[in-house]
Image (cartoon, rainbow over all chains, first blue to last red; front, top):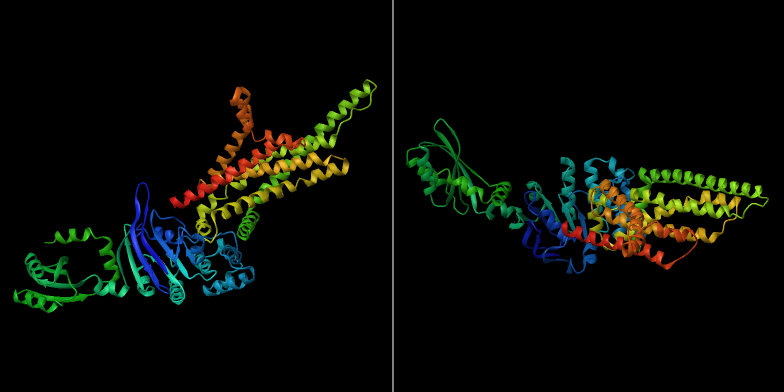
Length: 320
Length: 260
């Protein structure tokens, strides 16, 4: 449905995105994850045709965004980071205007506006001036606007920002409901949101794709390490070198210390369960094994690991 | 075309839900009323004096076409008033959309950039047509109490309309350059003033420079229309300014897309 090939966006002073390629299948929900300034909004703006790419191509339903902008835009509903609201208008009048410029025929306009208002639960405020609405309602008017004329592709830039927990839940449910019929790309920096709503995640950092996978794969096997916390009483430096000597261990860090007892964080290859071997090694040396706890790396850990790739090895080495 | 109409409707609707349209209309009505009064009393006093002078020498009053002089003076003053009014409306055309982020809606909707620009242009022009239409009140007074020739009045209105096209297009272009309404307003006003006082510069210049400078004076080109003369060069002058304004806006919106 959406195919992005090797797009880049360069400014005279900096490169916003570089060599980005991916495809989104029909009915899929794709999540863009990345720190602020990673290039999520720029990528979305290029896909919607708001901004031309410096290089590469984007196709929506077979139409090239550069060559056939109008055909592409007809197929896209877009919610920018700041909902594009004419705040002096009433909700109803605003949606009617957007419907008109999106090509909804005047015969269908009233029905279409009612449908989207019902979908995001704003029918009760339809006669109110947008400026007087709460942030949550404004955000929902923004989403309603994107849904007008039932576009097959939805691009939502941080759709749940500014909503309260109940509304966040509603919006996520709405997005899940839209999948299947619509193809959705959404960006966020809220990790649970990705885990709950997206079929696939693209992690972006410094304008490049650093990982593409399902949230489950990313969390469990995708990154190849499992994490074990172990608390041992004994000489610290020896313990570290012993732990490092075990097969499969990729990194050891001291987490905390209290009265000669140290707590270590051991990152190991996920394909090997080293807990038994580790316990034996510690006991054989005559140290007291006080606690051994295995933890699954959360998506958050992976996210931080991927987007701060340079810093982690540095902090690992200072422990040895 | 349907898209352009949708934008014109929304744009005009916005003028009238915000105080802007009412403020501009009120000021315009006040100023045009005062100008009418000044022109009328001035002309009446003048003709009275001439009639009295004539009577002293035993002649009848000289033939003076009072309604024609009044309408020419009154409509002529509209050019100056509009010069002040137009930036108040055009300053927000694009700057406000950029500031609120609604430009992103317009530029990602299935509309061409030209449709967006023309929609905004025609909306602002329509507002000034409405503004000019309010002058029917003093003009009606002239028709009730006199019998002015309609030809020069019609050409005067045509001239004012073309004048609005030109200034609105330039104001719109300036508005597309910034996110700040006030900056856009002040810049437009300064530009219009420059086009106006270019006349004074022409007086001290010589040769070709003088010719070019005096040709650029936006108010001078209204004079022929006021006198009932339709000259192609004046019409082309205003239309080409309008075209340049719209074209530059188009380029500016295009560059906005690149810069994001």
